[in-house]
Image 1 (cartoon, rainbow, N blue to C red):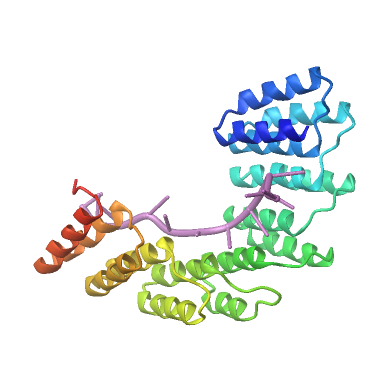
Image 2 (tube, rainbow, N blue to C red):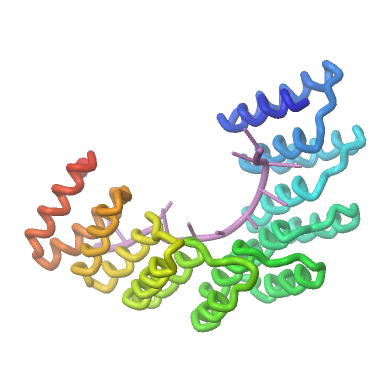
Length: 279
RNA sequence: CUAGGACAAAGU
């Protein structure tokens, strides 16, 4: 069944979910028993395509074959509901999962916490975190980052920063910082955001990525600080990162408005260098 | 040797 798992994984990589399902059938016909991973792969594929009803059918099939869902597969399924914003079914699944002695872990809880806060249910998100800790699961970067995101979305930036600086057992990464950078930019504090970028750089291990730069450039643009935005673009290009065409456009918009002609031509030149055609 | 969880996306 290892062989089949490799094939199934490959098919799913090409989004060939039906072909993978077909292969699952063939497997059984040939007396090859799908294992937990086989099912996990297929559930993941179905979830990614929003075909949650078929997952339910598959679960029946699994049960009849004496192969109950394991923790990973439960989590995959739970997360699919979270992504749809269907926290009712996500919560039901969690209950079921606990009943079946498949212990929810940090990944499971983080997915749920993220789901609750995206749907604006911050109280429940906090409760999930409490439950997670009570169950002895250790928060990791993903958990902290999700929590910081929730605080930011509620406008609690001071608390978010406090959380950043009190992380234990793991270190913030570029995503953690990006979330805070976004939050400051949205509050019209692009300068503060830029400080955070410097802070992450000076940590020596975390490098800004395209998301970081794009966020910061947009932040400066919405404050009409196109000089700074242009500076950031320059740094980005120096580092060999490729901005999205929209980033160029939003910057050009501002530079034109302020009649910063020489910089406009320079940006256009840089665009051309990178194979972007103005459109 | 990686089957599951976290981030941005302008102007008009």
